[in-house]
Image (cartoon, rainbow, N blue to C red; front, side, top):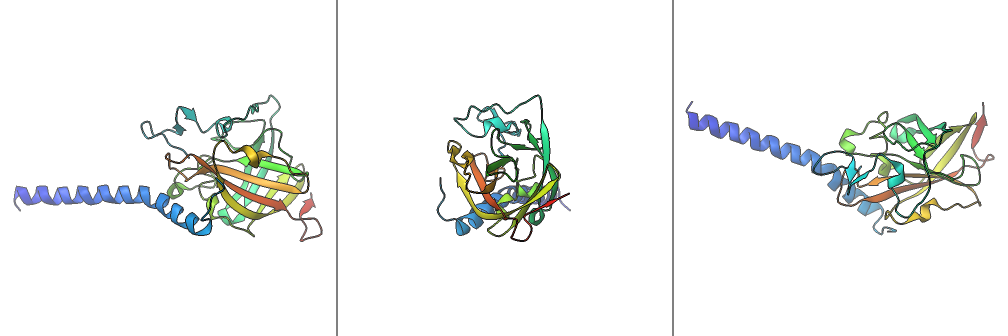
Length: 228
């Protein structure tokens, strides 16, 4: 076999490998946009730095929940951190830890300060990190909400807090801008659960927020909560 032929073969292999890597990186983002565009054509309104490949964008560290929404002055960190758990069967998330009074999304999910406690009237807002869906891992808190966009109306989520298991049902899924803090507002007419992550997962071009809004199933409807 001639040296020129060997070089051509090696070049072809490298080109194919490069295209394969490029496709595996871009396809999850493109497919996400396509799927969400069909399901939610009108929008209400994990970021990875391109240069450093870290979970930062525009000089902000998005493993810190306090950087996610512009215009909020809430203090996330607290000396008295409390915890509860979140489970989403459809996404194979089981007993994920949620911190009240913490900020590090690489360690656990975070409840936004001063939002309602689970099961109480109001809106329980939980933040979770996301990266490319290709690397989704329900046990890795940097990737735990990477497939949150797959949830749709009727899907269920469970919160175990203070000895009680609360059952929520998804009502809608939508996107908002980082300065749209209306999703943090409280509504005492019922008990709501709001899940938040960056979107599209792993795409630094559009730092928007994906919102999943669920409502507590009343106690007289299929046992919304069960005491332990």
